[in-house]
Image (cartoon, rainbow, N blue to C red):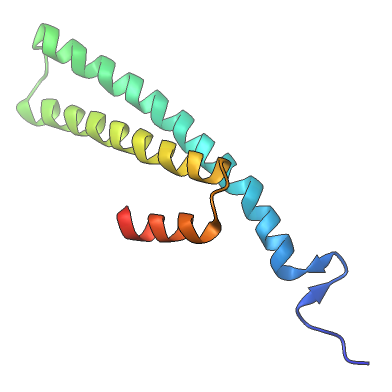
Length: 103
């Protein structure tokens, strides 16, 4: 009797991998969302303080803080899209194609 290499005692290998992806990717996206929300809050606060008091040490510092705000906003928006794509469990094919085509 020949043992099928694609199966394990817990079922087909692909099934186990898909179940791992089903819970780990939304968890990873939630972690990215939480950390980007913290970064968004901090960089927005620093940018607001710099704009109100004009106490930045150089123009380079002002632009770097604004870039951090831009990166935080971008990360939060894209992370939100990915999070909801995985949570709503749109077809894996659609999620994959949208991920590689549009982003």
